[in-house]
Length: 160
Image (cartoon, rainbow, N blue to C red; front, side, top):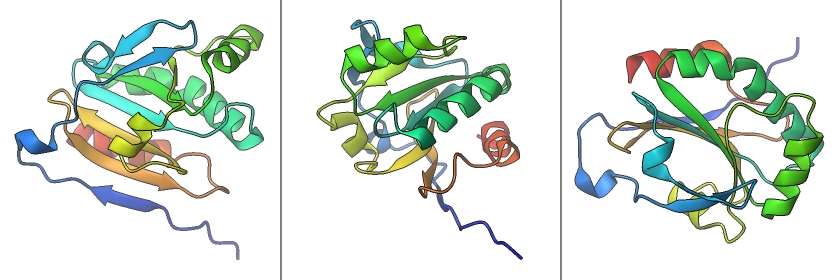
């Protein structure tokens, strides 16, 4: 019987520690406009997806999965953003070639600064930030997995 590989998942502490707050970084989107973390937060926080190159087949599947389930995440009071290591023009090319453009920003982190804040350099995964910009949960995805199950994500969002 096939067993799915284990996900590296970490529950973050619940106490508020100002040192654990994520700095208010700025990052470019697919249109070349600057986006600031504070402006990306929903009522309860933000879910940040991290991927490598946008045209990688597994990353295309990840984007399609996020498009399909973005409404569920938004209903829980969280916004969604996807951070890649590509140039803005690559993201723009993906955005305009999509039959249905993603309902969340495609963000470019060419230098890897944002990836390093969350220890996601060279990894794909997802981080949940609450409205205080404190990381509450993190998943690191192996190459053969798209994302965690939606029920796992929603369980974390409802508990946070």
